[in-house]
Length: 335
Length: 290
Image (tube, rainbow over all chains, first blue to last red):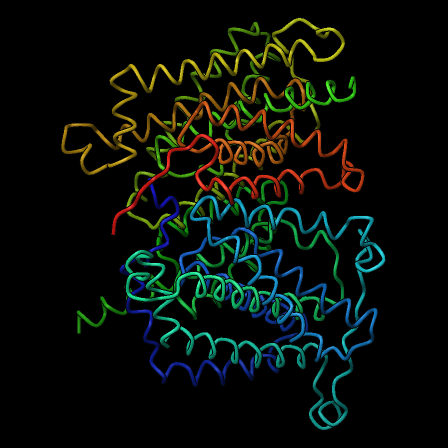
């Protein structure tokens, strides 16, 4: 009864730690040239997929690698988005500076939230984070903060123009420019996460996930690592939120409801809990599948989404990354 | 003072709703050892079935018990068809399946019975008790207590109830002493669906029937179950009333909160309770070994 929400790594994911380096280069090349072949709308969608991927990676660091359950990451996404939007809207900050500040504010918010969360495990933590996720839209709408957040109306922000020399020499459009910025930020953050997981800190995080008591007796400072992981996880999600605010050029409380937390959670599980690159598939899934379901039938779109979700879990119980790993092992054994 | 009493009674009336659903939550927790996020939507769907029966001319109490039986079989079927093949999947994947079920029930109910708000009949006489609390709320209060008593007796005094607890607490050992663990899970789903149906039919006359009626209430139901202690049905009922009362008093007496931040305050208070009593007010403390 103790571990209500078991987040221990399942065996299908063990091989996930090793991504062959030769796969990374083609991925970067394809990702970088993609916006020049896609239309404006598809490029925009790609940008959103990458933003979701960053947020999902943040959640995955917390749940997949540290075993802490969160249903409140929409709150950090919202805090990042609103920090960036308020800095740009009220204080006229340059957009590029507002994004990292959004992340840093979230780091502190996450760290502070992580401190009381230390006492909670499994379901109880889920409820506490859930409370955070549910209350943030209400707080943002609240009449006391209306001057700052714009209340129900939200805030408009504008993307700065593409640097002149890029526009004139290469004809880069606004969508392509932001795609490339988000792409670079994503690569950077994925690289950092990769290094974090494969370091002493990462091993401590995973030891806490797999057996908290054993980790403690080995001398791992469980409280510090857990709250720091909360902070880092919030940082990732906050960066994603800040970039989403700028790319969409608008923030409003209703974009950050509890449903967003659920979507991020679905993305994490479908991509593969405890897999870094699986987050990209997760982002792809949560952006495209609801639209796809909507296209099949407007009235029953949620039902179709639900059926797809259940079928996906049938086919790949350990997420996309788990499936790929399984196939890799199978193929290796056959050869 | 009158206002205070009034708010307490309103809190109890709301609390009865939460308590009812919290019972269903605890019930399935006893059986499958984790939360069922689709609980609310299952209850909503059962309530629609009852509404359709009544609309078709079936008398209330016949429809009431028919719905309970249909829900029981439905719950059983969900476990057998959807969760049995996923038995070895990670728990987080199960939660995604719950979310899928929520989407399916919600959307299907909207498609079959449309999204218009419907009134649902109450089995209790109209009117109120001294002008303070409606008779339906009083009736619901007693139905909740009755349900609690039945659940207590079931888990405490019947072989099946004992076996279900064993299967949830330690599936391997339970299997070794001859308990059919798989069927116990299915039974747990069936019973949870049946209790959820009762909760839905009790709640519907107050909040009216529509596909999203359970969304907010389920949150309070979870909160109540957790505050009271997820391992204790009695605690869940107490937690339900507590959450109802706290929510109402905070909304009335703290001017900065009003009605717009009511939910936030309730949740903050719950988190505060958990910080001091991490296993809930009436839950058992669980000791783990390395």
